[in-house]
Length: 167
Image (cartoon, rainbow, N blue to C red; front, side, top):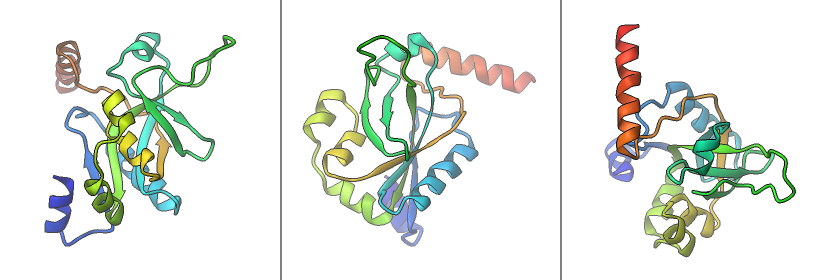
């Protein structure tokens, strides 16, 4: 769908795909993903992550976690908490927010790739890009990650919307 829209818009250099289950993504986060992609010439895709400090979300398979390199390079995405602190301690955990900024050529390449083994295992399409050698860079943001994956998430989103309408 994103590629079809991009073709209709005259083939822009960067195409943003906002996931429908993330309705609370801020405009600042969209800009951050695009800015991260523009600043990383090696990257094919830009995205955003937010600190994951909630222990319940860290265990929730619906909250996608990301292992990052110091430069923002996404090393792996998982439904499990990563990295695993083998010797204890509290590693920095990051939650992925469902938005992607693609370079046009990268989106065209991604569309031609078949689902990969890691993608099929974790049910995360961004792993298809990583397995194909594509680079993904993440901007760190403070956005509220309110994905709607379950009926409980929908109820929470409705409560948030109700609060924002009143106040």
